[in-house]
Amino acid sequence: MSGNPDDDRLEELRQKKMQELQDQAEQQQQQGGGEADEAARQQAEAQKDALLRKFLTDGARQRLNAVQMSKPDFAEQVEQQVLALAQSGRIQGQIDEEQMKSILKELKPDSKSFDIRRR
Image 1: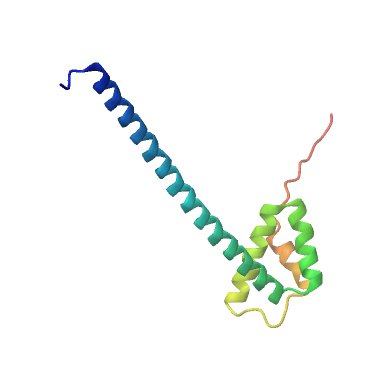
Image 2: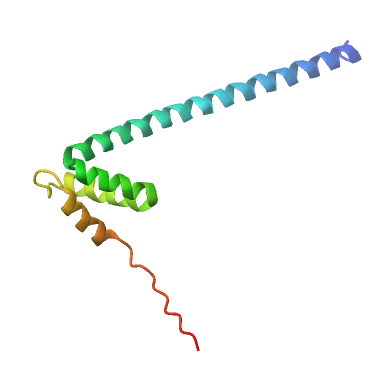
């Protein structure tokens, strides 16, 4: 009886529907994993912000925020440096604005200067 075209068509539709359901389930699992990654990233960001608040004065934080607006990658590098200093115990008290200026100068990449000569 399996030679019946209606039965074959019905089985084909069942297989197609099962595949669609499996694909949807896989997608939901992947999205769920993405949400967990996002939550972990947000928690790490909150911890970093709390540590920066602890080790930076208001003036130093404002200066770092100003740098972040213009050069986010460089500001991230500075934040990582400050956190490394804090975790290694090399910060006594808080970093003030003058100390932040010196950190920024130390970490600032060498600016490329172009010497243009006209003949």
